Length: 143
Image (cartoon, rainbow, N blue to C red):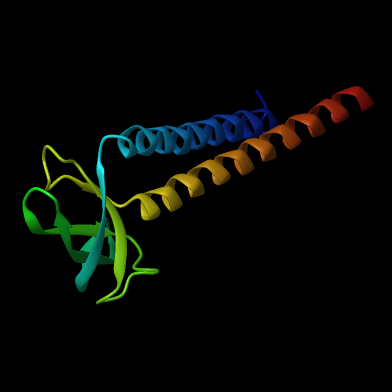
């Protein structure tokens, strides 16, 4: 196989894996929406720390959120996030909690953005693979 052949095969594989991750994430969110209870959380604190990981300096962000449950009243949770885009102290954030285990919390908006990024990125990379394959076919017919 030539490098051009490897390029479009790699693009197809990477694109479809990313697309599968994105779709799987949306399916996972869709399955819990009917069983889990929605709540509005209030961001109590955002801690950002610069740490050394994997031979690079990185920023780690931890968000502490307070939310109300029907069964147990006020609860707290913390979540590690990659970007604090759209999150500010004192602001509200949508979340879902498991009524059986109220400390089990998911943030559907932020997870949806992540799964959307994987889906769109996967489609884009698979499309690049399709274009490369089409160019290969044109090059083969012209020879």
